[in-house]
Structure formats: structure tokens, C-alpha cells
Image 1 (tube, rainbow, N blue to C red):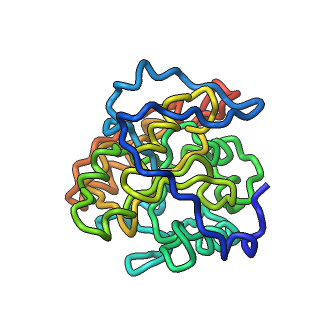
Image 2 (cartoon, one colour; image 1 turned 90 degrees about the vertical axis):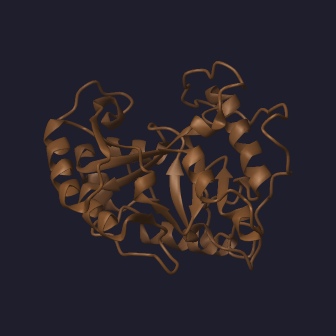
Image 3 (tube, rainbow, N blue to C red; image 1 turned 135 degrees about the horizontal axis):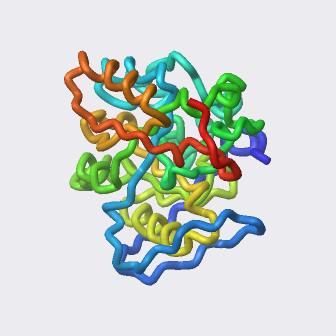
Length: 268
């Protein structure tokens, strides 16, 4: 269960020791019943090519396009979504969980991405499961009402190459839900790379389904490579929303991303 936000507010996050991606990965803890994922072929796979996924309701897409970016839930660029999928409690938890101590930015100051299209929060939405992180609006909605914005790690690191001190914590990687007290944070550039490598190195542990890739403040929409949708009807709707925006982002129908893990059909 998610711990009480008051238990989190004063706790400094664990910062992963700086290393590089060339360091041998440390195996993450395994959990009973963790969902198995396809094995990574080798540690030589470029981490920069790792895809990152942001899930939002289709009704939020027009405002994202107007702002030209996906924005964090708090901060100077924050916007109120038309359909809020994050519960009030989850917003409070993320706002009170600091990246590297009480004086640092909070999780709510970052745009969240998943490392898998089967991430556990998204699985709760598409299966309609009760989840304290989500609003009932989110879990009551059809999976086809959502879109998945896809980019890559290398696009985020190009935005924040680490050339100035403030870039060092602009990208953060976690090995579980970012608002949980037990979660480890890669809260420096090298630490983020190391933890990302660790999460990817043992997909059978299920950590990749819980991990988050966080980008501080805002993520420009022109760095979104693909919009994943559930069916042709939604694809046509999304293309209609995109048309006046000037963005020419590819829209792809990929039903498996929108199916509960134990289902083999999708209502259109």
C-alpha cells in the first residue's frame, strides 16, 4: 500500500552512487508474482534508445498541443488537465516527496514517464482496477479513451545534456513508484543512468513495470515520436486534433497496449 504522505514529507531520497552505464549492473530485488517481461538481449543495447511512455486522456491532448509541451503537475508551467487521472491523494504524495532532500524539487515538479507500455499504473486504468493513485474517472473510463505519448531516453537527455549544474537533477530515474518511501532515486545524471541500467538489466523482476523516468518541468511535444492509440476511430480523432496544431507526430494503432494483461479483445 502507499504510505501516508506525512511519513514521506521530511525524508530525503536515496541517491544512487554515481557510476556510468559501462559499470556492471546490480540486480534489483525480486518480488513474488512479478510479471515477467521479454529479456533484454544484452547490456550492450543502447540505453538512449529505451522508449519512454506518458499516458493521458484524449481530452487533454488539445491543451498539450496548445502549450507545446507535456507539463509537470506543479511548477511555473503546470496546467490543469481537462481529465485528471491522478487522485488527490497521489498529487499530495508526489508533491511532498522530494528528490534529494527537503530543499530539493518534489516529484510533482517532474513530467512522469513509464519505461513499459504495460506499466502497473496503466494496467490499473485499462483493467478498471481500484488504485489509490488514480481517480475513479480514470478507472471507469475505457482504455480506448486514452493515448500513449512515446519518446526515448536520448530525446530527454538531449534537452538536458548535463552541461550546467541545474541539469544534473533535470532527469531522474526511479526503480518503483516515485511517491513510495522505499523507492530508490537516481537523482544525479550518473545515478539516473546507473539505475536505468539496473532496472533494464533484469526485466523478469518486474521493476521495469513500476519504474519511472522523470523530466523536470516540461517535455516539449516536438520530442514525442509517436502517439499510440487503441483503434482506427481514435486514430482519426487524434489526427483531427493534431491537424490545426502544426505538429505532424505519427499516430499508430496498437491494440495490445490498451488491453488488460488477461484480456485478448478490445472494445472499439
